[in-house]
Amino acid sequence: MIKAQAKLHIGTDIPEELVTKVVAILAKRGSGKTYLAGRYKEEFVKAGIPTVTIDPMSAHWGIRTKYAIIIFGGPKSDIDIEPTDGALIGEVIVKENLTCLIDLGDMKKDDQRQFAADLWTTMYYYNKTPRHLIVEEADIFAPQRNKSDQAKLSTIALDTVVRRGRQKGLGVTLITQRPAVITKDVISQADVFFFMHMVDSNDIKVINEIMSNAGVSKEEKKGLLAKIINFKPGEALLFSPTWMDTIKSFKVSKKESYHAGRTPMLGEDELPDPTLLPVFKDDVIKALNDLTNGTTEEGGTSSTSNTCDQKTTFYLGLGLAMLFFTMMVLFL
Image 1: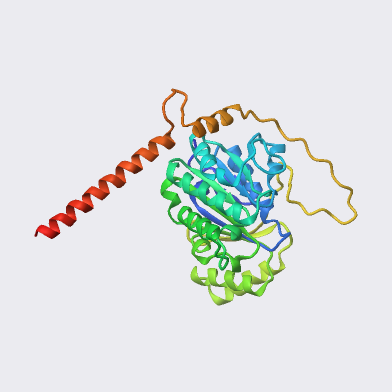
Image 2: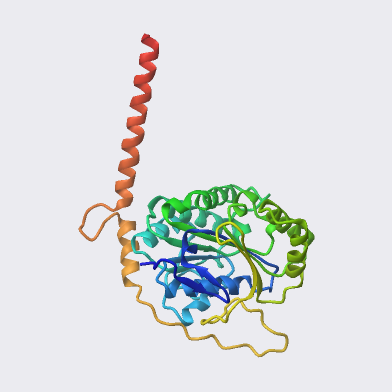
């Protein structure tokens, strides 16, 4: 259970109520955005807050060196996944109350989007308790311009979770190195921003607009933007003038787990793979099989089948109501 007023310690203190908020981490490559997300993911896990990371870059598996969470897909997979498994995984996550990593690094971009769209749509449908989603490279899933069918689906699904997920207990962290290319409909909903080092004029323009919309004065913006441009890796500006009533710089505290997203140094010998903690996955595999086969532990039909029956009843009732209304209009 989440304790009121408890804090996440990440170099500055953040209320645990962040779990149902929308967060945006905006930073140039190599500035520490993945490290920052990993740091408060550790704090979420320690606090018993269910957390689901969607990782298209295979940069987050290092958390398993400290915390025994299930990894779906990717190079460190406990349970392999296919692009069509998003809905199935989403239902299991909610029903088994899993904290997990979903590594989509082995999939093509549109397959990642299809998986994520199905995952988020299903989680939004079933979820009822506080749970946080961390979306690495969020611009892949909600791009400003790329409008493949899969991109449209993932954008709609992510937008739904960002705008309406709080009522279902869902919070979201959006991580991107290019705020100028992620759709503004999604990024504009953030309650908390973490700005790290950025220099691209288009990205700075987005940050300037965010600050202007928050009512920051021209003179204060000038000073804050100068900080962001000159930040060193690991330095961040916490910008939450409404929810936290806070604008402050801080240095991200050291992670407890291995940072799989680190950049190798020139001339550095290849480092051996760190040891990952073992996990018990039999219950998760059984839950996946039960849903796939349409059965529950009691031997009845799964909630997936029940959901289909409920939807069928709803649409049948709606059709009859519309027919009745049409007949009334004709006879009157």
